[in-house]
Image (tube, rainbow, N blue to C red):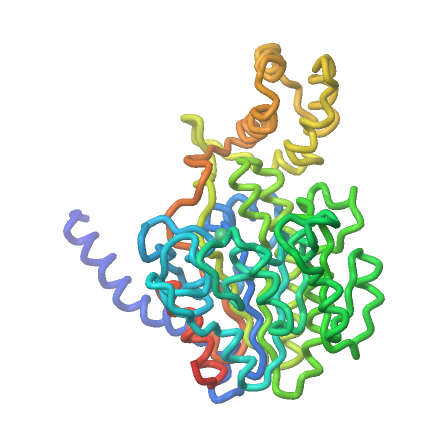
Length: 441
Ligand SMILES: [Zn+2]
């Protein structure tokens, strides 16, 4: 057959088959998106610093189904007002208010005007509100949903603004709620005492969180001085998992008859990307996935809950494969048992136990030249070198220690989830959530 005929036949096949394939695809979405159904509750989940390369590596690492794959609906552009590469403050502001702003700004436009957030709009309708994350709860992403400040560094002011606006606050960052005299960093006031006297129940550990009664109306949980632990290191702490925090938040918020808006952030996927630590990345995605499963199960039972999942930007530019080979082995990361930061702390002061410590926590046989490099490196460079050795073993490479401007995947489940199909801008996200909830925004 001539190549022209072949091309023509292929074209015919394409024209005849494509519409039926598309129809099947759309009917799958239609089933999970019953039109006309009410959206009473929204759970917005943000895997901070997560892009499609994270999804691909994690799928291989897990050797099983990635739950988010089944609810993929679109892609999202992430740039900020003043840069093609956003920071978390501008990205969070866009995703919370529908307006692009400058990097570093929280809940205000580029001229400094306060912007209404989707959480504030939901609260005006009498809905319950919650913010959950694994860095400080005053960090940029949760802050952007309920506070308005000119710089994300002003975490004492952010803590003040969060109080009494948000019913459920769970995460790290206790030091931002305490006066400097008692170990805090910025505050004059003891915001935890103030919270308790205005009706918040305060908890600090995994077991205290587990004992919270469902009739508690306002809950403040601060489980770490600053950031909470990396998931891969969490078993060495008293901290709850992201899934446990999500479950408690849902148990409390579901009691509001008007519904609720809850934002859950997998905050440390981003930190792991900044550290170029691929095992840490994989375990924090797993922790996020468990929280997503809890949200999806809630939504499935409830029938009036929309779940939307989208990262705020990529962090690190992690690759799937690299080092000039057609090869990727993220499954190697399953052997790694700690973050590079933790492993570095296990080296003795003379650094004579490098080989044994690396073997114990990564199950890798490090070469003589790697040992030499680790032996001679400045102390603050050691975790990066360990992360580099682990990355190389999995054929993962990185392009930057900061964020990149690639698009990120959007996932959605429940009534009106089809609103999030296609290529969206990050400013479309809260507008479509408001449309789904039929609230003034
Ligand atoms: Zn971020």
